[in-house]
Image (tube, rainbow, N blue to C red; front, side, top):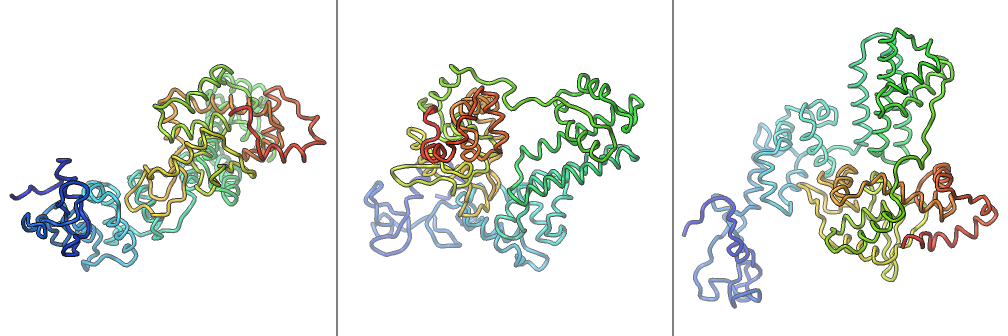
Length: 479
């Protein structure tokens, strides 16, 4: 019987062909058919059932054939060689690692589909031919942003391109694009100086200490948009920036876009420092302001995360990190496996500078997540993934937006949940200890303590003693 080309979806047929191993009689790697069932250890030829079938022309393995006598893995190797060949018909040495990683993927059929239909694969082929330079700048200039981002991740994961801070690079591109929309003249010069010496300078300085998060780039982009919007408003009202007064600012705060109002303070502080405007005031919202879960909803949601059997393990862990430990999704997404310390009898996680002991049942869920196969296995992904929550891009973590979507499907708003967590923790843990354990600034921790109505001034003389106990058992009240 001649099987049709292409994947065959009969699960029984596929399972039988996948039951392969070393035949105890001939010593060759073959499909094992006798005795019938999972205990099979003899190939068809040695068992007398007939000659071996479905032998791959390329590797000689007995397996389901994908096309023209080749198994999926050999077909993938042939197509990868064809796609990545340069004008001389040879895969360039700079791309050999990428080719090998594609062929070694755990899902060859998925990789075959990507080579055939993926926009990133088409761009990779143009790189192999030399039509596009193998640089970050050349990929940045390509119009298909999503496909180039995936391809860039593949190239970085295999060491073909140097790693770079991608959120920072996106912020630089976004700033340049926003500035081109501003009419040439004094406003553009002012905004260019603000973007260069305030927004980007601050982001680059921060990036030298820690990788840039999407939260940081989001706030930076909003601040630049707020400055652009304010100057547009001034132009439409025939007001020069140097003549801006407090009454004008207050009018803009009332009539301007709600999402940009609180972000304008940074621009006005910068202009005042450079004598472009007089000192002007923008009222800031406190850290505790905004909606938060009620105490009843808080504990109900915590119980659900830890005990509802229908919630996926990854969602239990992420949701608990937000709800019980006040972590931002941007920080949760960027967590690494090295932050988890499993000593058998205890499990701890490092959010800040100190280890936080994780109690049951959450500790069991964290261990289950660590033991589960990596769900987001990508084509050409490095085998030694270091992220606690891998993303769909090779060598990259999951995005905060995706984590937020997963929690939203459970009816959990990450912002209100985190705000409730911070208010709960700040009311029970000294600000200095909270700052160390959660990795937040002491001023921020103090703001949360004030918002929660806590007064820890009496602990000033006892911080050394209190800190030692809190590091061992900091969050008894939320377990």
